[in-house]
Every structure is written in C-alpha cells, then in structure tokens.
Image 1: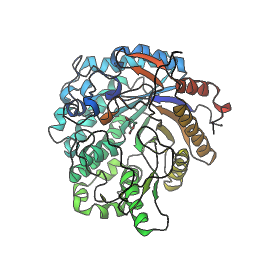
Image 2: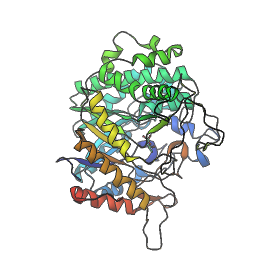
Image 3: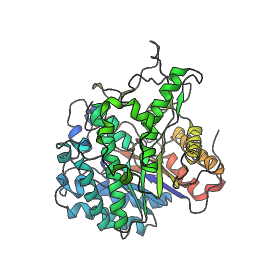
Image 4: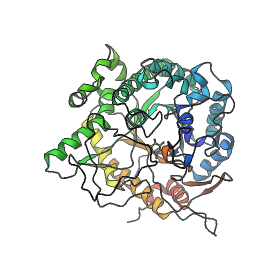
Length: 468
Ligand code: FCB
C-alpha cells in the first residue's frame, strides 16, 4: 500500500464519549447528560457520567497513543466544560484541554481539535438549542475562547463533527439528544449549525488559525434497483439530505435546488438571511470525511419479512429524512458489524474519489472517522483480545483509502474510530469501537489485537498487506 509522505495516522474520540467527570471542576449539564436521564433514551440506562474516565486518566491515555505510534489524535472540547451554562469561561475546563495538548505535543502527537461533537450546554437547549439562530453566535464566542487559549499550540481546527447527526437525528428522529421529533426544528438546526460554522471559520481566521475545516459524515446513496425510477428518486433524496445539504452550502454557498423543493413545506428557505450563504461558504482548508457504510435506498415499502432495523431502545423514533420519510433501506447481502452496518470498504474508495470529481474547489481530505463495533471483545486467558473482525475491517478500509489516493483523491490522513471503547450515544456502553478495550468496572485499558495490528501497520505502513 502506498501513502503520500507525511500522511497522518491517527485515532479519534469525543468529549462526551470518553471524558466522564460530567459534573466535576465546574462542568455543567450538556444535552447528553440531560438526555441520559430520560427514561428509555439510552440503552441499559447508561449515562456519560463516568464514561472511560479519560478526564482523570488523560496522561495514561496519551502514553498509550504514543506506544501505539499514533501521529495525531482527534478529540473534541466540551462547550459545557469550558463555558458551563454558556456563561463565564471556566478556567479549570480550559486547563484540562491545555494539559491534554501539552501532553500530546510532548509525545510527538499532533492535536486535532473539534469544537462541537454534539454536546451543547443544556442552558442553550432551554432557549431552543440549534433551532434558535442565536446559538450560532454563542458558538462563535465559544470557538474564540478555545482558540485564544489553545491557538498557540493547536494547528488544526474543526468546527463541527457530523452536523447531520446533531440536527436531523437529534431534532427529527429523536434518537439523539435533545430527542425531538420536529422536522422544521431539524432543518432550522441544520441552517444554524451551518451559520455557526461560517461565523467560527471567520473568527478563527481572525485569531490567526491556519488550518480550519469541518467533518461531515457522507454516504453513497445507491438505488436498490438501478433501473427503478422510485428507487432512483429515493436515492436522490437521501443524497440531497445526507451529503449535498452540507457540502453545497459549505463549499459552494448554496443549498441544492432539488433539496429546497423536497423540503419546501418545512421552512428552511425562510430562515436564510441575506449574507448567510456567503458566511457559510467561507473557504476551508480541509474537509474531514467520516465513513462507516453506504446506504442502499428504495422508494418502495420494505417487504413484510424484511430484516428489522436494529434500534438502541424502544423509545418512539421518527425518520431523520425530513420531507422524504417514506424512503426505505433494504438489506443487501453484505457482512455487517455489531451496529448492523454494512461492511463495504469499496464505498469509502468510491466516495473519496467522487468528491474530487463533484466539487472542483474541494480542499484536501482527511478520513476523520472509520471503524467497526464488534461483539465478543473479551479479555482472554492470554490477556489479549482477539478481535480479528475489527482488524480485517480496519485494514480493508485503509486499503480502500490507498486505492482512492491511487485514483487521484487528495487524502492526507486517516483517523480510526476509536482509540478507546466508549459511550456510543443512544447505544450506551455495549457497542465497542475501541482498538483499546476498556473494562468499565476497573477502567483498565487493554490494547486489542486490532490496536496492535494498526500500530504495526503505522510503523511499516507502505509494506502492509490487507487480508482477503
Ligand atoms: C459517528 C460519531 C462518533 C461515533 C461513531 C461510531 O457518527 O461521530 O461519535 O459514535 O459514529
């Protein structure tokens, strides 16, 4: 496998998923702390209160990253820790991230910072959260506070992680915090997060940031039957909502015309004020791509005997596909992870290549998340975790990245999700994505075989061979 010189090999986590210390040193509730208290919102009643206790074990975790040979670490800062209640700056909160950054630099690991990975301060939710335009301006203030404190040491700044999830899944489907099922609010959240992104890009640049970007979760929306007009139309709608509703405003200062028609009754167009799209389309220096699976889309109802969708809880949920709620996702004959997500590494190759063809001003790409949850991560008598499915998943996707580069995609790094087993949102702690196992009773860390494989791959990268 061939990768360009200086290609970054990293791993990723997010504040609410690993830190714990949810109410320590001045941190106050984020929407995920509050959502976790709603009966039935999170599988097994799990909460982010302790998580992987990274807040207290950070030096040990950075030492582990160093041992694994990671070049970069993607983490997020918690707004509710840095500006609890979105009020005054909490120096103890900032201090945690300052120590983390110092520890990383000391270990020779590049800090890759994300400002928003879904954990809005609850006080802002009480004022409407992302459905309220004002939240975009509050985000910009928070971004500046973080940059003022860490901008001397952190080069790469990501505004948002996967805005699709924190808008459509949080406000329309109700599976994520804040747990609403309101399509109009979901589209308002989309637009206000875009605006927040644009305002923050401008503010970070004013503060001297050189590398500013955003991370999107993107998919290939494949018509179930390639010649079936209903399936083609459904795939177009999913592509609009999943990919182009984010890519076009950010890269081209416009919403897709077909999307505006699809959602015409849901108030999106009415929210766009005069300079918004100009602000949103401020040039970025890199695009983070999170990829887990493609989507096989149909415009027909699923047959009665179709494989049911896996759902984390019994709580009532709605479709996140606002204005296109009828679309279905027939199962294909592909291997699946414990999340029930299809394993299809070639989708990653195809996606990375096609982005360059579809967006002439596409900045350099980084795969900022990719990885697999598998059941059966048990520490064996030999003290090891033989997670061969995860190893295979990783090496095949890394091969797909190499193939994309060989076909002309400008990909400059790969961050594996995740460093540690962690709080997998509505799924709680039973879905494990880590290359490092966490025993939640003792917080003991054990590097899984996949972690050892990734580590040796990083060390001998270009010679490694993916298994069949
Ligand atoms: C992504 C999220 C990340 C993690 C993975 C499995 O959608 O960004 O926090 O939960 O999925």
